[in-house]
Length: 400
Image (cartoon, rainbow, N blue to C red; front, side):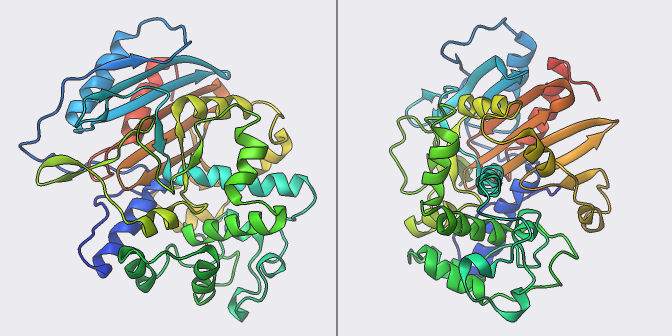
């Protein structure tokens, strides 16, 4: 849906909010393509196999992936290819930690950015199936009094980005986060309540991280559990997705890929304040996990183990308002927590993610029961996971 050309700026608040906006917007498109800096030495490519996965060697895949490490100056990537719910190819390429030359493993955690929105939407739809939420319930039912302009906002509007709320928190909020002032959930909600809507809810589409952060608060208030605790109980633990966790508090890097940026023409670990990490761990972008666990999630989507197929079909129904907002991409849609596309009669059900230091892509071709997962540990002004996934798809039999 969107491309991105710049990363998070830590210079001053005005630039900070604009640059963070482009990073989070990568969640709706992948990003990439800026000129490569000179002078940075790329480590020799390495590859590691996933534990317990039997696969035939695919030299053309490995050559392409290792070539992308060099071309895009990406420190490391993980790849998982899933066919009909079974992993058929999984490898790590490059380094999870450049400084210590620690190779990436397919089991390493990466921050997945706005792929998290699919999990936030799943949490809401589980509560819908439980009879505790209706998609057309008004938001004030769950968060209390709202501004008059918000009176028409429903849960559905937040899920499909048609609430009219702004895409991102305001500049004073980012200034506080930049200054490492920790803002708790209730204070963030109080700040959100001050925002005006740009149109009557349900009449226009605009990608909205604020709306998904609010949905995480709704999950807590309805379920009585923390947003992530609810997902862990209902999704991650039942599926054995034990790598999944919130990005804050930031854990040790032993099983996580370090996120990098380019600074002075070199890879350096991307540093954010603790307050920023806590904000980014809200529902719009807050999950990190491994590509191998993402493959378990893909397999579950072919079953009724987590959500009913009828519920998933509803989540994967096109929202026609997207076309008016994306006239140059008329075949791109959004459902409830999922990006959607139909190309030459074949469906794409997917989500992309961009975070400080990471760019990710989770692409499902359900008609062919093929899924390609690519996680990278470089910020989006250089890394382009979307390009990699689209190039890999034909190698595994996806035809356009």
